[in-house]
Every structure is written in C-alpha cells, then in structure tokens.
Image (cartoon, helix red, strand yellow):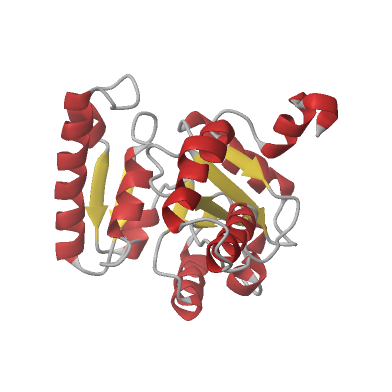
Length: 239
C-alpha cells in the first residue's frame, strides 16, 4: 500500500525483495500504481547498468515478478507477508489494518513500516494481532539493509521468527527488539547523536561543517564496520 508521499519508500523496499518473491503493489488510485511501476522499471534498469542490481535474476525477470492492483482483496490473496507503507498517520494505518483484519487468513503476517508508531497503538484489538509486527526499514532500504522488527505484546514468537527469516532471505539485515519502545532503537541512537550535535554547534565548540566531518570522516566510517559496543571491546582496556 502506498501514497503520493511514500511511494519511493515502498518501491525500494519492494525491489530489494523481487529476486525471491512475487510482489504486488496496492493503492486506491490506479495512477499511483502505474507511476510506481514505471519508477521501479527505471530504477532497476539504472541499477543493472551500474552493476548495483541485487539478486541472480536480470532486471527484466525481476520486473516480471512485480504487479499492482486497486482491489484490496485481490492484492492480498495468497499473500504470506503484507507490508503497509502509508504515511505516519495513526488513524489511516489503523483503518487499513482494520480492513485487512477482516479479509486475511490465520497465516499471513501483517507488518507496518512505521518509524515511530508503537505496535500497541497500531494493532491492539485486531483479531489477528498475533500475526502483527512492525518491520521498520531504513531509507534507502536498497542500500541500507537494516530492518527493525518490533513486536506487539501479543505478537506470536513465530511471527517474529518468520519475519526475521523472510528479511534475511530478501537480503536485508534484520534486528529483533524484545519489546516495543518509543523511537525503537535506530531513532533513539540517532536522536542522541543529533541532540549532542546541536549542543556542540550551539555552544560554539565546533562549526556545523566540521561537526558533519566528525561523522562522515570519523564515527560514521568506523560505525559502518563495527558498532559502538564492539569498538569499546576492541579499544585499549575496553574504553
């Protein structure tokens, strides 16, 4: 499911999966689907030409696995995993999951790409709540593979494991949160860095240009290979 504001996010997430899965895009506006498919084709051809296309299949073969429709029942028929990618609007997302709750079976996983809304706010009260989970990708998901898997308190453990396995198979790098928390993990870490960055610049310690260099030419480069805990473990006396 997509919207004019979120179309690129869905397209990138879908295209990273097409080497292994059939993907069906759903929207209530046919023009959105048509435009999305055209954008996918253009992006995948560019990726293939530049040597960045993922998977063993050619761009054409991957594109053959992607389709779209404006009928919700048809869109989810036979689905094993449904990823909602609408804007960060709680009422809109709840409406969509309410509709899905009435038509899906007991095997499909219902997932949201939300980056900040808690699963308890999204899924509480649904009869298929055990099949519900947040799978938060990171933009651009084709090149940044992290996916945060966040459970509702009533999510069945098998839903988490199946989602984790699917994301691994799709070439992503999933992490499992043991419980929901405001901001999840990535944004909580990001907010801490941003807060300190504003303080350092605001107090005149460093310029904004040099602050960005500290990240892009320092911490960012290091954290691209190892995380903060491993860095401390490998550093002198674990500091």
